[in-house]
Image 1 (cartoon, one colour):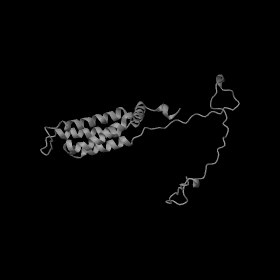
Image 2: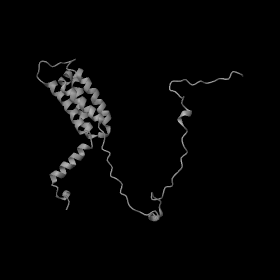
Image 3: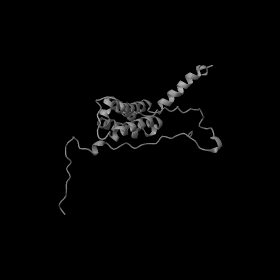
Image 4: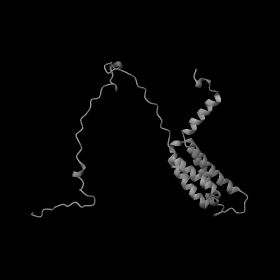
Length: 183
């Protein structure tokens, strides 16, 4: 019996959760969404030091709302991560002007770090190694079809032309082109 056969359901669920989380920019989406949520909370805070630009500014609510949406969409659709990352970076910077100095800097920094992480995230490209089988070259392919078991013959490649034919002997020396004016 192997160790995998004795795994409890909780361990298997944790493994599935880990695989799902690593297949997308989860931390980046979480940080962007938290940054937007923090900005929304500071807009509704009963503090006397809050800044309000315009008539309670629609942008003050729109920017953090779109940031929360970008965070959710980063997790939901990782294929579009570059667009959402750039959008969250731009909105994080715009929030400095529209949303109480970016949620007193905390929300803005969360959105910027999350956007940078989302932009830098790449999907895991681990592929299983192809299974190698020891098939003799003289064996007939199944059903008479050709496959990759045919031997490959080496091909002779002519030597490349030396580089000194194309470049001057010293860097920086001009090439002189002679023009014959004899008519």
